[in-house]
Every structure is written in C-alpha cells, then in structure tokens.
Image (cartoon, helix red, strand yellow):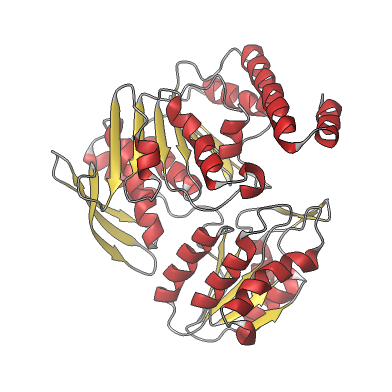
Length: 428
C-alpha cells in the first residue's frame, strides 16, 4: 500500500492527491479500529488541538488525572504514557501510523486506563487518522501560522482543526482571548461549552498572574464557584494559558479544587519545553521546541524578562515546511535576542543554505545582521553560543526540543539538543 501512496504522490495534482490520500487514510483508520476492536470505546477521550501548547496542556491534564487517582493514557509529540509508564518519542510525529496508534490505544485499554489524553493535529484530523475515536472533551489552545505548506491558507488550517469540534464532542473548551475564538465558538457541544482567558465573561477567567523565574502563580475566577489559586512549576505568560486550559478540563470533569491544584503543581517540566540543561554555572542553557513565529516569540519574550544580562539564541528553520514563516522568525529573533547564532535544524529534502537564507532575510530586514553569526553546523553553533555566555546570561536553543534525531538530506542521524548541550558544558 505504501507503494501505491508514492505513485499517487508522483502522478496527481496536490489537491486531488490529498483528497485521494485522505480517503485512503480513512480506510486505514476503519481497518485499524476493526482489527483492534475499537479500543477507545468506553474510555473518556480528551483531545487537545491548536498550534502551540498541546503537549504542555496534555501533560498537565495527565498529571492532574493521575494525581487524582485515575489510570491515564497520554499521547503527545514528545512522549506517550500508558498507566504511568513513560516512553519518550524520537521524532516530531504526534500521531503515528493508524495501526500503530490503535495498537497504542489497545495497550492503554488493556492497562485499565480510564482516560486517554491526546494531541489532535490539523493534519491528523484532515487525514481522518482519528476516525473511530470519539471525543468527550475537545480543547482549543490557539491558532497561529504553521503548516501552511500543507494547508495553504490559515482558513484551511482552521477548518482542519474545526473538524474536532464539528464531531459533536460532549464538552468544548475554548481560549476566549485567541483571535480565532469566534470561528470556533460557532460549534456546539452536546453538554457544555467552557471558555478560559482574561476576557470578560470567560468561564475560568485569568484574574491575576505572578511570573517568576522558575514558577508561576495564577488566580482563576471560576464562574459561580469563587477563585482557583494555582501554582505551576512552569513559567511564561503562554504557560498561564496552558495551565488555564488544563484547569478548565479538570473543572469540566468535576474534579475538586484541591485535585486541580495538586495536579497543576505536580508537573515539574515537559521534555523540550523551556527545559533547563543541568551543568551550567552562573548562566543558564535552555532547550525549547519553538518552531513557529508565535512559539518563538512566546519563548524569547519570556526569557527576555528573566535574563539579567544577554539573551543568546541558537536557532534555524526546518526544510520542507512553510517557507513564509522563516523571515518572520528571523524578525522575532532580532526583536528579543542580544546575540543570534543562525544554524541548521533539519533539512529533509531541501538544501541547507537556502533555508538559512530565508531566516537571514528577516534578520536583515529587522536590522539584526550585526548581532548574527551564521554557522551551518549545529554543534559548532551551540559551542560558540555557550562559550560566549557569561554570568547572568541565558543561552536558548530552539527548534528541536525533545527530538532524538535529525533528518538531514533525507537521512536520520542521532541528535538531541539537551544532550549535546550537556556535552559542551562539560568541556567548558
């Protein structure tokens, strides 16, 4: 069947090709569900969609449910978890091949999981990879530019995400502050629709935040139920929204305030998300998965506020992906970073130099060429950045986060930014 898919890709126009492939994926999903006996039936499924924050929200929800005494299955971009047993993923693929995915669900069912917490990607929804998985709670985080190489336009991207909400979930949870809120608000839930944000009228309203270097305090005004005072070990304004989204899930599931508070406080970190690398002295090295303009701005603006002296950035862009976001990311880098090391991330089938050139175009436009050093080799770029760091500085390496391998010219090579940073720090 994979040979058929390759021939389809070569012979047909993109739009026709994708329509045929989506039907193929639907048939695969039907077959996989039948083969494994529709393994998610009878399990409460929580699906989280949006451009950024899905992995963190899923991690928070999973932690909250586990600490409340439930058996949980979790599938994210960074890891999957079956009843407490963690498995870190090697690449950036969120949803696996449908047979692999359904097999995973079958393992979760066999382990006695009462809940499955799942990232629902736009491509997975568009390609029918989640057919047969009924959603109890559908969560929307935000929508910003990404995956336009696949969807073409933001509207097509939004429509793909909207398939989750059009499938009649029991509960819908929406970010009322996102500019796409009204687009998603038109969909109705079978039982309840809940909103979160600072906007007046939000069901769980963010009324106060206190951002610290290694934690965040958040007060949510819960409609008709007083205040919910939370403390998270995650930092950054974007994580305020991730925490609010997760707390909204707990609220909708009927968890007590105490269980929501304990669950939010219990999550120490998320792999590759503002992950502090041990071994640095008098300065910090942080690894983050940010690979979209919005995610990069969220990370850099947070670290800018926490940096005592220089913010040093090592980053690049991915090949075979939306090329229009490359110069935008370059502009974002200039806005926040004091020193920029532009390097290769993953090239896939593209040449590396043009990818960097796309990012450099934005850097030049923003007037940041003077503080930018272009080094193709990622290890060398990281070494130069870490050697440059002094007391009070923060070095942040973005783009790959938790990933355990890089695709360079179609070849997978072992790689993890955190481990490479540790090796460099030992030599310093």
